[in-house]
Image (cartoon, rainbow, N blue to C red; front, side):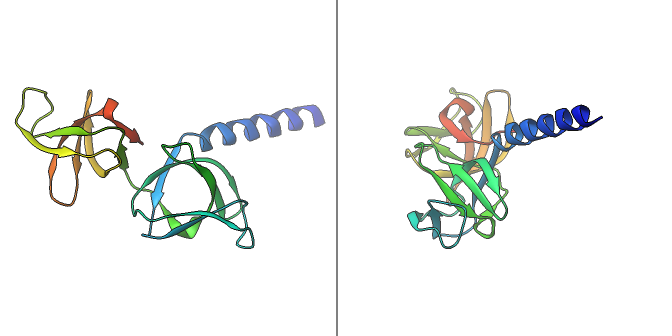
Length: 147
């Protein structure tokens, strides 16, 4: 009986870690502290200054989440500074199109590092919004959670 409980415990632990590695979240505020450890007493490693920036959760401990961003920076953030949103970031300068096709009318040049909010995705394309534009961009050109 003890062996079965032990096996179930390790299996659940493994699956919870694997599930945590695939969670994308984003920053709730314009200024978010990233810490060396999962505590408010832990020193600040760096500060994000980009609301809605998508980040990947790779671990969790109590009220803190260990994250990694598209540049491979990592650290711990308190959950009060995070939210679930479908945002992505561009990996290179790319064109935003009116429809999901390269033959569609180009609307704007989206600069590398621009945060975009995903409305929906179809096949190889996602419809996104920025402050000034709404259009389509290829999934392969963005980093973050894509439905």
